[in-house]
Length: 143
Image 1: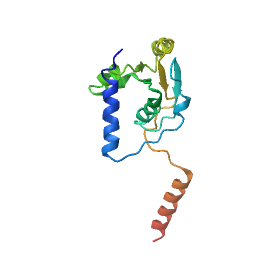
Image 2: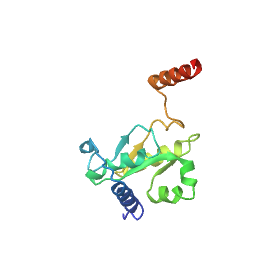
Image 3: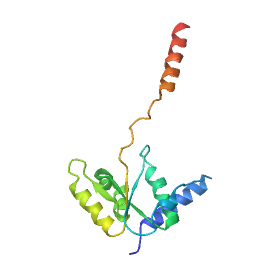
Image 4: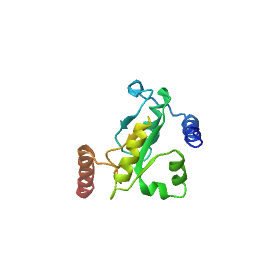
C-alpha cells in the first residue's frame, strides 16, 4: 500500500536535519526485523522521540506505527498527519481498542512503536543540579 503521508514526512524531517547540519547516528538498527510484526520500545523523554525512534527502522526499510495519546489525533495539524501515517490512537482511560488495533497491525506484519513512559512536563532535575542551585542560593543569601 502506498504511503502518501509517511514518506514525505520522513523526507521533511531528514531535510530539516540536513539544513540544521545535524548528524543522526542510529545504532542497533540491525536488530529490527526486515519483515513481520515487531514491537519497538523506546524511552520517551521528549516530544521528538518518535522521529528518532522511527529513523532507526529506516535502514531495514520499515515504518513504525506509533501508539500515541488520542488527543494528538484531535489536533488540527498533528491529527491528519498521525492518521495519514497510520499511527494508533490510545485512549488512556479505555485502551482496549488501541490494544486490539496494535495486535491487528502486528499480525499484518507492522512494527508497533511503544513509549512506556510519557515525557515529563518539566526537565528532570538531577541531584547535582539541585545541589548547585542550593549552593547558588546560599551564596546570594550570604552576600
